[in-house]
Length: 108
Image (cartoon, rainbow, N blue to C red; front, side, top):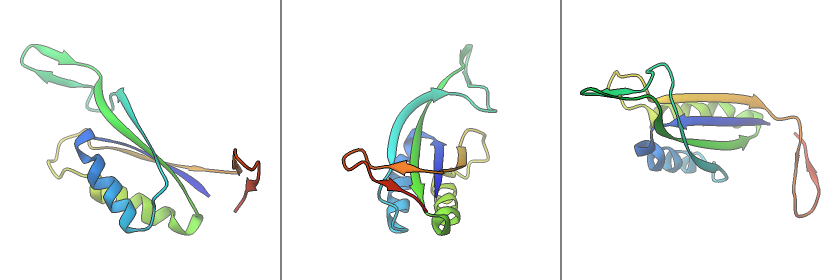
């Protein structure tokens, strides 16, 4: 299993979640976050915004779905504007997970 974690532009959230649903990835956690990447914030006139609002999506997928999940997020989150700031996708191995209600362990 893998945790696929993506930090994306807020205006792309609906497109990304809809695209994930189309490839049968329904379970996810969505969190509003604030930060910056390589674009180092945003300058508007004389004002510098060092930290920008973003959205973080986290989903755990089976090994065979990892590549589809990553490519789906990239395709849906890309703005095509050529500017930095579209986001980042992280893929993290998951060794174990547990169902809180039942206490059962899920393993690959």
